[in-house]
Structure formats: structure tokens, C-alpha cells
Image (tube, rainbow, N blue to C red; front, side):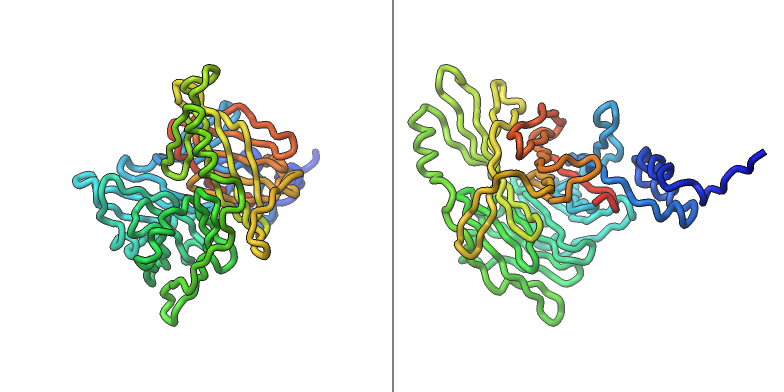
Length: 374
């Protein structure tokens, strides 16, 4: 009778199949704890978890299922890789906020008292629009808000914050999305201006912005003309939270809307502007992507250059709370853009087609990558 092979001698192909069937991080951790051979098996390249403001959704063969929920008074306000930024609201006042960074896989939590002092007591109309983490948990954190006084805040955990000088807040309040690239933060406006923030740190590690300058200015389209054309066709032109909404007044689409959303993404050391147009039929519950344009920032000519022919084997994961570029492999489709708000859609840059939208329970979704997946 032949002896059974020890666990450590199981073939790698079989072990890859086993770990590919494990979804929860705790199960993957137990798998790697068996022995050195099992620990050496590479993590499968999986699609990220979907993060709603109140918790996490995970893909399964049956669709999406909830895995972890936040407390009723805590909401997700941004994600970076495996980290989640949350806003804990005092239920008694509804205007007192405490901000955290969480890694649910390592059970690590970082408090942000420096941010609490700035936007810990705000009106009910106040919004945190996006939170970016450069190298969590100790790296710089960029916060974009709806506040005219503090449209952009830079936080170095444990050190302090940078706030924009008052003369610059008018310009910075027009920024609708932000992205890190090397040692700079960049912001894009609805007019498609690109603004750079040159960041430095003093001897105590306190962040400061030494220079703010426009990199690209009004290089794609003419928004004033678009707005005027919309009004001439009987539609309204509304700006809300970085989204341009046009109500179609013609007989064929009476009451339907076109929504345009701009995203800023770092990909392979370059800055990309993704311009997405959605058609939202009556009764305006959700919509579907009908057009996507991608442009690359050319800082030498100070223009946006159209990107055609795909994404060089990469794919983009995008929402208004998150953006990430990855090399396409495993479950990730090549030359595709994964949108997570207001519905889940996958747009193929080669065929210019999108998958049917999957409507989520909340329009402000993000995504979270499990450790080692990319």
C-alpha cells in the first residue's frame, strides 16, 4: 500500500487550485500557516471587494454578498489598496466626526486627530468627497472636501496638517478629483484644468505645499459652449458633486438625462483623465455608460492627449472615492475600465462596449484589494 504524501509535498498546481477557491482573507491566512511550501504559493489575481458606505460586498457565483458591515454611525469615505478611510459620526449631535484609517485584513487602525481638529465639527451639509493614502498607514493622506475654506487637506499621521491659504481656496474649491504621482498631488477641475501641488516636509515631518501651479488649462473641449448648447436644446445644465447633468428636452428623450463624470487616475507613472458619459432614463434610478474617453496629461506641451488602442495591457478600477491601475491578469480583463459608481460596469477600451450595469444599493461605492492580489 502506497503511503500518502505529506502536506508539504502536495504539487503546486493543486495548491494553486485550493487557494483560488478561498475567498475570505482569514481562510487564506490559515492556508499559508500550514507550512513553508503552502506559504510560497502566489496569491490569485482576484477582482477587488466592493465597498459601500456602510460595509463590504464580495463577489461570488451567486452575485454579490455582504461580508462585513460598519456600525450604523460609521461610513466609508475612501479606500486605497487594502485600506479604508471611515467617518464616525456622533449620533447625539450628528455634526461631530472622528476619522480613521482601517486595514481589515491586518486589523490595524490609525486615528487621525489632526484631521478631527479641522473638520471634526461641521454642518450636516459638509461632505468628505475623497480620501487618498499615499503609503498607508504612515504615509501622507490627502482629503478633498466640500468646504470652501478647506477644499484640500494634507495630513501626515502623527505630525500635522497642511491647509490651503485663503487666497487659493477659490481655485482649489473647483477641484473634483485628485491623484498622487511621485512626490506631487494633482487635482482636476470640471473645466479639465490640471493643477499640481509640490509637497515637502519640514524637519519635524510636517507636510507643506511649496508650489501650486496649473499643468494643463482648458485643453479639451469648451464647457461654456457645451452648456450653452444644452440650454438651446431645452435642457438644464446642473453641476453637483463633480458631475455635469444635462436634462434632455427633445421628444425622443423627454426627461432623460446625460451625466458626465471626470476621474483622475495614476497609471504606469502617468496621469490619465477618464471622461465618462452616462445616459440616465426616466425615472432616473440609475444609468448606463454610453461613452468613455481617456486622455493622458502631457506636461511638456501642457495638453491632454487622447488615448486610443487600449491601456497597454492594464486595467483601471475607478469610482469617485477610489482609483487604481493594475496589470491585467487572472480575473481582471485586459484594456478594461471597471466603474463602481453609480453602478458596476466594465468598459472595454478596444471594443468601446460596456457590460450591463449592476445597480448597487448606494451610488457612492469603492473597492478594496485583498493583500497580495496585485
